[in-house]
Length: 260
Ligand code: DGL
Image (cartoon, rainbow, N blue to C red; front, side, top):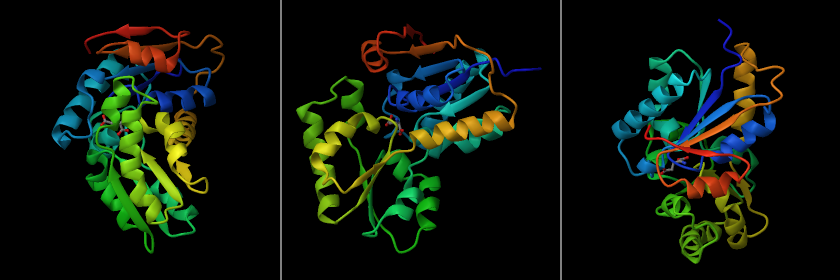
């Protein structure tokens, strides 16, 4: 059966994964997409592996009911804790997002790299494995306590976020990092505020574009590219207050409320 006309599904604990959706939509404008913001259950970052897996399965089942041909786990926490199990359980391709620590290790000149991510990502086996493979690099890990909650509350640009970011980034600046890895799909929305704090020579690295390129590659490999779809549909669902998601994606898209 030709499923190339079916949509790409994406899910995140909330609105953060729209940073990934944006990159995918730019690179693959002919693809229909369905985005799930599981904001009712945000943040995932402080939950146990079992809880994250349970929520990831729930989101996947909803997207499969809508006939998604491929699922992008647009959440570092869910990827690092659940993608292996999702790939074992379901037959469609899954694309995950992981902190871009390897590209940062290749780019650093000072040999010190900072990473801001959730507790669930930094404690995951997958992340530990990645870090263990890097030698002669000092990695400063920082859990972004409170950041996702404030973003989910629509407080982008707020003084509360400035205070937390200063607290998390100052020790990294003092340790002479020259790369900062954003290990959570919510954090690209903090870049304007982060830039005000970091010295200009520090590179901010996130994984959005790489995920979009990987999505394209896997669609091509599986003959799943949607050709000749000039009127691609972008569908958004949330199970919490829709206003912040609406603000993030803009008024040209509709947000559907659903208790998935
Ligand atoms: N956006 C998510 C991530 O990439 C999850 C953040 C959270 O819910 O704690 O990790």
